[in-house]
Length: 178
Image (cartoon, rainbow, N blue to C red; front, side):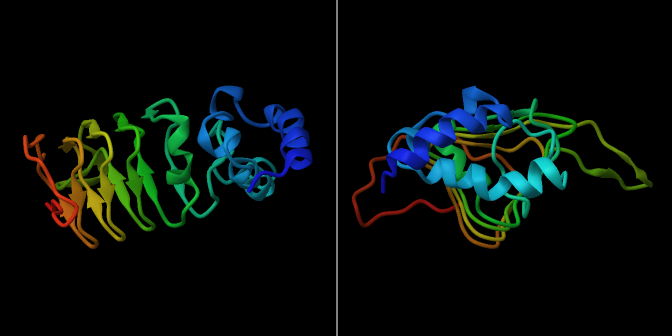
């Protein structure tokens, strides 16, 4: 639903709080939902300080370690406005392919603890999600995992190994699950 006055006012105000390069794409240009996320998250994010250093609207119910190590298309801003997601990327990058969906309570973890000294972390390894992936609710993707385009991770999964691109053709009734 487009709300022209709301969108116009939001376009004037929100660049004061969020990086302009993230305030574009389908959620801002084709609907007003992106602007709604900005207003909804403004108080908790920029005033209360939960995810304060993140330059785009992200729900206070999510945790993002490093905006610099997070690569995504602004059309996929919806991935940061669900709830309970954990983007632990202080030690390596998380790359989210265009059109990918991340369900609530998903953890993307780029570094594990050293088992002999839990105060220490192992070196980080990038996580790469291909285009149009779907990470189901309550799933965890561990360091170094690369998921090919169109990969579906079932709800409650723990992904420890990469899944490469498969050259198949899917009909409407077929799905791919790892």
